[in-house]
Length: 117
Ligand code: HEC
Image 1 (cartoon, protein in one colour):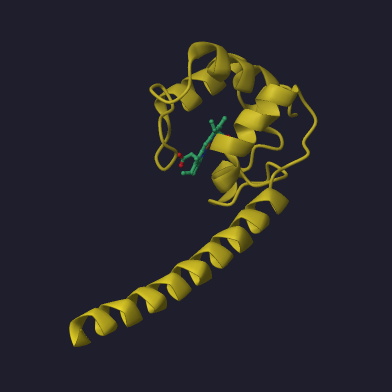
Image 2: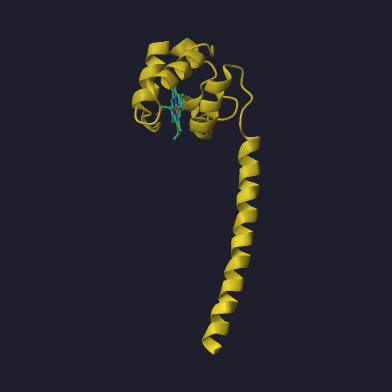
């Protein structure tokens, strides 16, 4: 019986912990929805950017991982073809998206980014 009481107590504690974790998660979700961008562009492409790229390239394309991650004028530095290559194969820090995005998605992102000049 004593054993059961102990277990019961710890269950209560972990429920409280769970509630706290859920509250934190809700807060975190709130924070991340705030940081989703309202960039101009095709809705689906911007949604892809929000899902896959925003963590490193920021809500306004200005980049969070140093000057090389600034995409605001990427279209004047790189051709669409080069951008496709960068997204497909990645860079020094940037991960490759070849196995995460399909060709249409990569193409749409590159097309949109090549217009950022
Ligand atoms: C983990 C962080 C990270 C993620 C996620 C990421 N990138 Fe990058 N990206 C970088 C960094 C850092 C660079 C600069 C080159 C390097 O060091 O890899 C870069 C460079 C680029 C460049 C070339 C810019 C230039 O001037 O050389 C393009 C284009 C680009 N990223 C597009 C994207 C797209 C599109 C996505 C989403 C599908 C994405 N990136 C996701 C970190 C990231």
